[in-house]
Length: 242
Picture (cartoon, rainbow, N blue to C red):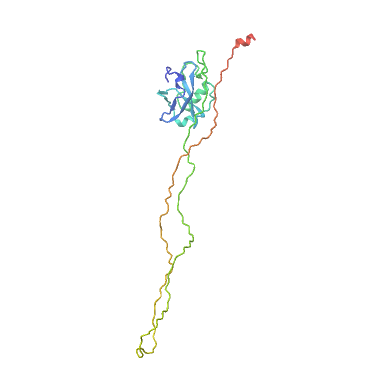
């Protein structure tokens, strides 16, 4: 990375892997003690950016608000754990380069690196602190199935029915003459009819049921730990005067 890049301008930039995948955002910058060149950066990864891993800035390219580093995203999360205490020893730095499979030859000087803000060189220290950045992601909470099934029940319905009955009607004959009729046997038949209930079923549509979704908004409280830097002034002359 060019020495002309202001390390403070790198803070918060998005780190992109050599394959073009987003890794995370830069937390702290570590400079070479002798040259002041950005050598390493901590990258905040994970859902809420709680985890920090070291990535090399040597041969990195800055484009807008992105920094492309010469390593794969899959390597970053498993990088050796080094305390981000503001200073990397030569051994720690070389171990990181060796892990990433990069050239571990160091520039002139002892090769130690310091975190930006621990030694500004002009009597100024930049104090930083972490902030919670909360987001959301969709997760599957369950599935709802709509189905039909058949139940059988009894119903009672009163149905009016009709039937025929025999009615005997007698009518006297007053103008008959003797000898017009003979005494003999005879019969006459009448067919009777009746209605009977008939039960059958028919299928008719009675209701349309649709399974839909709606979004309900609610608030949840999330808790996370953040770190912040404190400033302490040590003046040996004051101790001597005491």
